[in-house]
Image 1 (cartoon, one colour):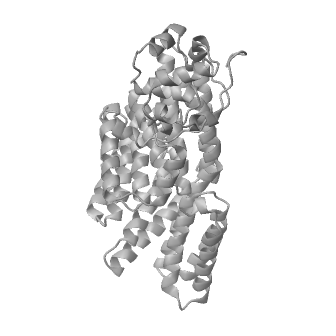
Image 2 (spheres, helix red, strand yellow; image 1 turned 180 degrees about the horizontal axis):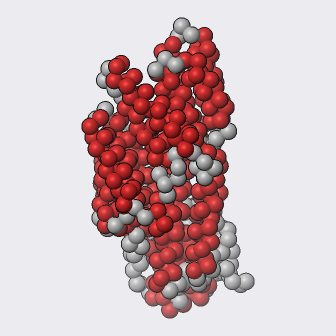
Image 3 (cartoon, helix red, strand yellow; image 1 turned 45 degrees about the vertical axis):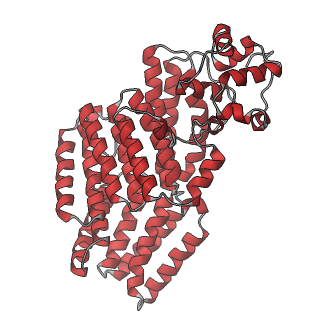
Length: 461
């Protein structure tokens, strides 16, 4: 903002005079309204990153229809994007997201939107699923360089560490706030390489924000930030990152008990990972296909998917793995994932004998993961291992050890700001409820119910 530029007042955009202008995306009407409030063409251009001549052309009838230009003008003038039909407004979006879970039709529409973006088509139907971004009072540089991109990359790494150590609730507010600032740089002047690198870094950052929302239990926000990340990754032609984002969308679907939907996301991810020639990402997608198949009770498919994952991991060059594809290369991570898969097989088994067999495997993998884990492995993952261990010790009637592990891990989970951690405690409770004749198991069940009752609402969604 220049020293002589008039101030913006956010209440302006609520005026009855402006509402129809905004709803119809009448940029000329917005500019004329600003002129009536003391803005010159030069000042409007400076604010919206346009020349005075471009502003004059718009005022004289040139239509503005390009989505990215409309978005840039809305952001520069601090107009909530929902007011211009560019995305849902934050209030309407929050109300819609919280009012009900996705209907079957919503799910089909979302899956179709993801597929359209994955194949390179970002249309209005896909934009419906983008988030309303927070505003920022800080001005972005009019021209950016690689050092500005490096700032986004560094913030992504630091906030990702915070998420992994303490849970998504420790990172999500700071991440969302910074992203409100950083994403505005996409409208700054930059050379072609810097502009592409910025899109990649913003895509990775938005993916990290989406994952943090996923971890605290807000799957609606997770979907929106992950969709935004996918749009940026495809625009930057970064198929490896697109594959990583599709993996995360698959995990959101699994968290909502939608394994068939998850498989669709993961299979789209396979296409992107193969296009990128990234065996590490291919491995992660196969490993998570195994988890989705476990939720469907398809043991043979699980074994096949895990075998493919291990084959691809053997082909991957760990020295060249992208920062968004480090999962399973830290000791204990892949073994912990196998424990999760067999925990799911046990949960969805058709009979008691089969459930016990899978539970025994889950115990073995969880113990191995704990033994393999070093200081580089995330605290959250190690907590999840112990939740799986205690759950399946209870399933296999090893009550004394299972209850001891459960008591310790309940205390650990309370120090994580992770909705997934608290939801997984419920699995311990379900296993404990099968031993109603054991007073310690009953006390354990009451302890878990107390923890989940007193946890913040955002972590128990």
